[in-house]
Length: 199
Image 1 (tube, rainbow, N blue to C red):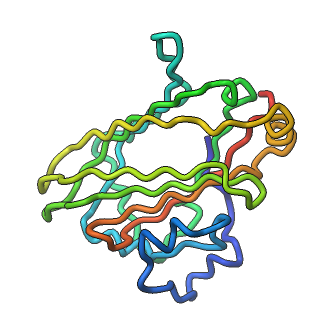
Image 2: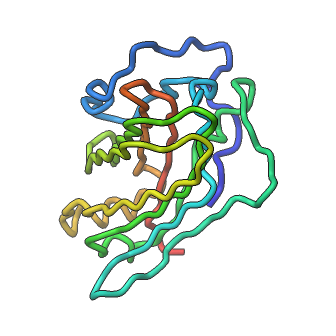
């Protein structure tokens, strides 16, 4: 796990962010976005992801594949002058990941002084600009100043042996965009890149 170093050209801090981004718009995208669709300052609800776990679910058992937890009392509040690479993460899972049919994630997060209603995540996964799978989940309500746990179950896309091998042979060309909306307004946008090559 590592953040992508450097500042991509499309992330020039002077860029203007688009406005009026809707859930319907991001659900229609046919490839990963060139940049981020909202600034860090759009997170007016002070949503802070503090822990994340990915696990494979198979044969009535679970295997933890990735887990990270924010250190307590660490103040890492970001603003629009921060390097946009802090919003992009890389995962190196290895080829065995593609054999799992069901993946579960657990996200722990806090919210600020305002209530959060209809917290919606739309996650789009692509390989070489081809949509592999789109996921859409909504958490109805989070009370102010609360710690919350969001459990999500993903059914993995059905891939042919040829597609699986192509993905394995081309690390980091599998990408995802995660869009987070509150009452239909985009407040966060994160990116990820994946490698399924052998470790």
